[in-house]
Length: 146
Image (cartoon, rainbow, N blue to C red; front, side, top):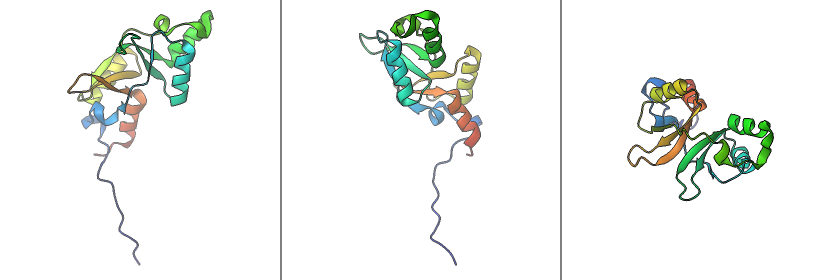
């Protein structure tokens, strides 16, 4: 007795050694303007279950910095609370990588800089297109087969 034919997907996750940043990244950028308050950033992070957001220039929306969950906690606990603006606490060192780069290069960059997230730039346009986290790299390591 045989059942219906088994359908199988045509896409396999690549192994870490052959993966590109584009294979692991999360598309889209969650952000708040630099003149927003910590509470606004906390709401965005909590609503979307993310640990990092991009902080943008209020004038033109371009990437201005980055805010991690640990920076948010530090700012909340330093005595100034939720009334602080993101421009006061965001890290201005916005680490980026091209979507075409090898995933191992991204992992090395995160390790060497002691960070857990990179802003991913589109390989052709150079515009920010998504984020890559250490957990995204771990997912490729865990599930990569091709």
